[in-house]
Image 1: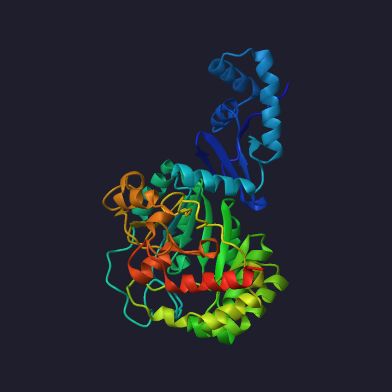
Image 2: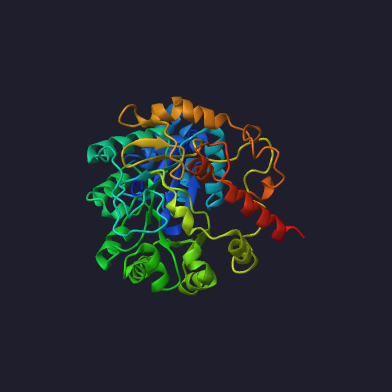
Amino acid sequence: MSEPPRYRRDGRLPSQEVQGQAVVVVPARRELHEVLEESGNFLWGQLSRERTVSELVAALCEEFDVDPAVAEPDVREFLARLEEKGLVIRA
Amino acid sequence: MNDCSLLDELNVRAHDRCIPLNVTLELTLSCNIRCTHCYNFDRERPRPAAGPELSMEEIRALLADLRRAGTLFLTLTGGEAMVHPRFWEIADEAALRGFAVSVLSNGTLLAERTCDRLAAYPNLWSVSLSVYGAAAPTHDGVTRTPGSFERTMAGARRLRDRGVRTSLKFIVMKANAGEVGAMLSMADAEGFECSVDPAITGRYDGTSGSLATRVDAETLEALYRGPLRPLVGPARTGTGDGDFRCNCARGNAAVSSTGEVYPCIATPLRAGSIRERPFPEIWEASPVFRWIRGLRVADLPTCAPCELKAWCRRSPGSAYLQTGDYTSVDPWTCREAEILKSIGTP
């Protein structure tokens, strides 16, 4: 059985927290992205280190007191969205 | 939001909340060319005495402080930024700290390998190169450096071909007024973004010889009626809404090569020195910055009653350098606003 994928921010991209929200710049595509919502910014913070989906779900549930069954689809959707934009990569 | 409209929105937020989102770091006053209009100092005279330029250790500490203060966009300039002996270490540090970096340069040092190295930075946002003509005789006359036009344009093409966002910054002056159209055509034909700036200012060293290179009002009007016609329109700032809508000391700041902190690189009004206090303390508490943030149009004695505000491209830096008063205005700016209004009003 293979290891679950581990995710992290693409640390090469410029970013900054502006009024509590992460802003990420993708110079190669001349794009700026803003991570919206408190839970998204919490996950973005978690992704400064390599994390599996399970680890992110556990951290999110502990922080926001939500059911893992509810949190997991949201985490997967969040990761998919950020991976598609190139903001998050698989380690 | 995933396009550069977010950039505009961020700048509005930075202005309203006083976040130093954009900081320009002047790495050195040294330069390898000798432009007639240089705003640093008269390059025909000995360099003015000043303290030592920032050490690598001081720059490292500054970048850490800027990061904490909220800076995202860091612009490296000079003099010529790339003559700084530790330019690449500074670029590495800026990448490590997560800044989106822009470089303002004369472009004469952009050899193939240099461009390879610059283009490899994933945090490089843009490179802007100063160009003073559509051909070598004009440009080289301004830089007083034979061969500079060819080197700058070759560097620009190398960066462009490597996918770097490369723009040509055209400074309009007497020497090149007759070829502004050709300059714009050159940028267009070669696929460069460009900006056009006809505003030449006095120098930081207090001399004003640079002003002799400015176009006169008659020439400026001919340019705005001719090749610069697309630029004629109401200005975004100074619209008379009661707010002095300028990002100086609100979303923008600059640090000189000797550590002086300014509201922007065009305005050498000293708010403090990072050799005396860390940047975040100066940003928060400097009386100069607090004063600037409190200014409204009503506080600008010449501008407040002026009917040209909607057309005015007032630069506090130009006003300060010309008159010594940040709230004053450079008369050339007033003449420019008259011209813009006369052309732009149906």
